[in-house]
Length: 473
Image 1 (cartoon, one colour):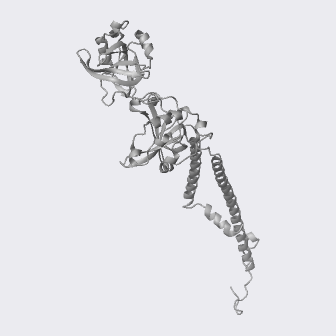
Image 2: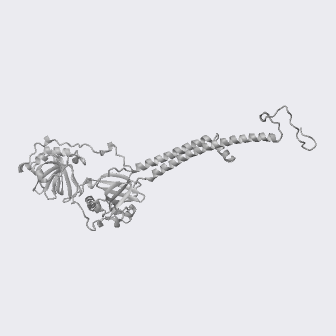
Image 3: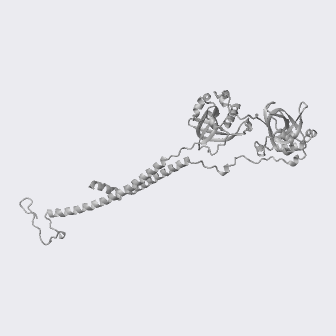
């Protein structure tokens, strides 16, 4: 080993002010590499793993409470409707009790109490078995009039004709001020009896009597749609700000929802496993070309919520609620409507792929009170985007960490070997210097010492003259 290399190694590994600092930097660098490797491996596994389950407290929807209405069967025990004479009489105490309980209802309470669509013939054939039970019917409003009674108080009585044009009578607390005769309504309330109600023209309406809080604007149920007529969606107008700002609920939307609900995915997507992915800005720009076409919309789930479909859940589908999801990406915003529950999706975290049919664009005001457009898609399938597991990155990390560890061990072994070689070279150099010093003394006539076997009492011979005249002393 040459002297220069040995000197460099000696200076590098000798004790000095920088040795502790370099050692600390090396340990920190190794710890950082290990932390980065573990973090990436854990992140890769978390991205491919299933979503965390919802907390147990979130399993019950918020806002659900026990209904306050309580029908007392004892208050209805005196109701009779077994003959034509008894059907002409209204037991006002029993009717007042049902009106009082109807006043305690809020939207959704009747469903919790067991609301059913009981056939009219069944109610009239066995009224005692259904007395006081919540029932519902959809029909057209025949007439209504306000009634002020000493026992019943203020209420509204009237008649509804069902799809078979059969009469149903009602007593409700609030009149329908925005519904005209002949328009479709939904009547829900507690069944009291088979009653013969006197019409304003003097005739009688004989049918079931429902006592409730109010009637709602509704629509007759449509048959399941399995095929859209050609040009059906051409009636949808969304080309300017005014039309795009109108509510999206329309007969076309209900038909499209039924079509998506009752059509298999392979038929809906034309034999493809998934529809083509289309950017929201392209849908908004060419809305008429994409309307009714199968598309896939992807984006971060900003918000998912359950909203009423139609006024207070009244619509031709008979589905009171629908799920609304807002997806956002740098390519635009999408408003996704789904009849299926989007289970396992987390707001603000998951990337969602929505496969369905493009409907229209809608304009709304964003948080800055500025008009913004979104593409409306009726979804057949919702799924959380799961990235493919990265198989080479963990291996690469392990290889890099292993190479760094092997390099560190090899460097330590080489350094140790160099230190030993440098120490041996230093000892050899010291020995050579000693020998050279001894030889130099003999070459110049120095008196050999005891280590050379000389005698200190014997004087050394005189040295030759330096200038040639006089001997040196």
